[in-house]
Image (cartoon, rainbow, N blue to C red; front, side):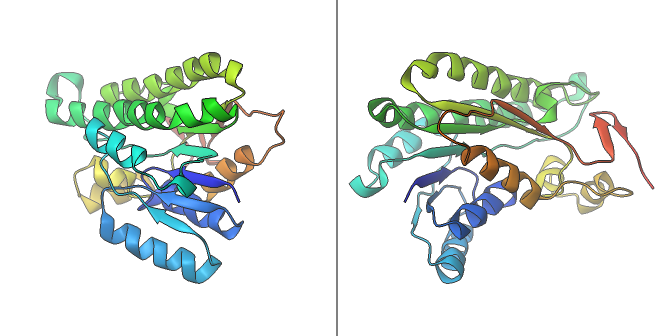
Length: 251
């Protein structure tokens, strides 16, 4: 069966994708930094779906860790058919002049460099086989900009640009590239963005029905399972209550 490699698999979209693909019989490589969560997810996937699961805990921002982990994959796990570059985050929501440089670096390192490193060390095998599918999780923030979203929006614009650039460069090798751009989705995203402030995180999703991680996983699975000649190159997903990054209908 096909192998799916998922970064940021310990929670949110990544975890939901792991469950969705495992339920359909795919073999799964799970990546995240939080090994204890990966172990729990692995046990769940094996018990619930009899899935074949391989854990690859590393930090996507650490080039050496990424390279070593991927190069040392067992031979029977090297044939990655689908790469889901899901690892990403927002850190802080400040006016540019008040921004924390550590937050900026964390977003750029995770959202941009993480995709570069993981894809760089996996794509060679896809090129050899003349097949593969790279799915990059960007954001509505990769298409629009909103106040106090400066560096986060810039990092997700970079993801969208990278998806287009990868598609241009890899089309000659028969490799699909899909860019996924979710709007407001209730995961740990806002909790992380506001540095663990539960009240602020909760307020983001009050008064309307946001997307769920499972909604995004369903769309990613759909994109990944189209016929060989079909590539969904850009998919934007919004909750019905949202029209753009600044307009939300609340009850």
